[in-house]
Length: 142
Image (tube, rainbow, N blue to C red; front, side):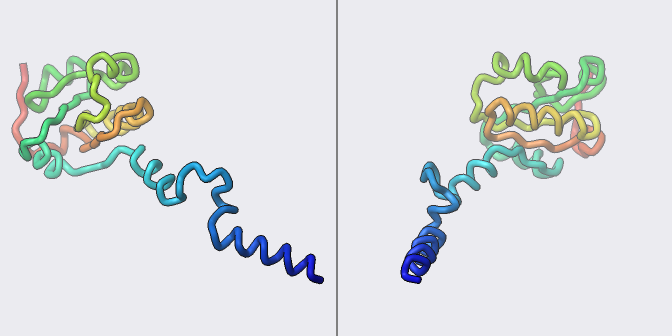
């Protein structure tokens, strides 16, 4: 009986201390959650993107459409890296993995894929504002 009581008490202490959930003690559980959260891109609206572009902080505006789409209409100051080239070109053309990157495409599908790829590559501040079709502000063309 004493042995059973000792074992139950031992496990109760482990559970209450959190050691049973994190046996190696590498990170507190809340820190692990923060790391996971930090490794996601953020979906924002066109209005939020415009505000970020106007707030005085540095940003990279990344268009992930085709060259033809880019030449037809784009947001001024955008850098073109088509979605299928992001994994190959990002490291050379976007060397600062902490830079604020605002990503768009035509409708939002390719920008979501590019944002996901950038996060997987270690970029920390990626914002997807969807498609140029929802951009109510000025655009330029060639």
